Amino acid sequence: IAGITQAPTSQILAAGRRMTLRCTQDMRHNAMYWYRQDLGLGLRLIHYSNTAGTTGKGEVPDGYSVSRANTDDFPLTLASAVPSQTSVYFCASSGQGDSNEQFFGPGTRLTVL
Amino acid sequence: GQNIDQPTEMTATEGAIVQINCTYQTSGFNGLFWYQQHAGEAPTFLSYNVLDGLEEKGRFSSFLSRSKGYSYLLLKELQMKDSASYLCAGKDSNYQLIWGAGTKLIIKP
Image (tube, rainbow over all chains, first blue to last red; front, top):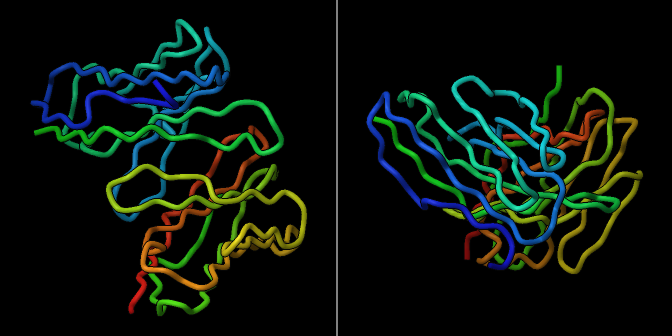
């Protein structure tokens, strides 16, 4: 692995189903993030984790949950998917340093029908 | 509230210069970021400003005025591959990024 990976690449899901989006990074970054990106809107933060074992809510956390059992993995779970959760989901991570720029995974395109 | 404003779309000609503006309002300020995002791909980091002034990186430069809550991204010698969306993001007092909706830049030959 080099950088940050996400799985699946895309998924079509029936409303009411449970779904977990996976995210793994190998850069030993402390902080990780989940965003959704919808047409005409900026990236919106769903949940974040500043370090393994801790998580926090972002701007749009309802209907989503996360866990951070270790440094590398940060899965996002939709307990009961709804059509409004149709979006492109990006996972990102950032390390130490002046800018702490975020590095993004390739994204997961999720369609909830 | 927190807000990032940038134009929705701009058009420029190959070989020319274009300036993409961004105004921001964040609770606290810990830096201003620019990212590039090609269609169907992830955002990639371009620049970071935390002090007033111009930061130059090859064909791309970014400017910040903290007193005016204003930044711009300057792209010189435009190439067709520069056709992308450019995202402005401000880091707030909680060190979270507040994102603009992005400026879609269309380059014409």
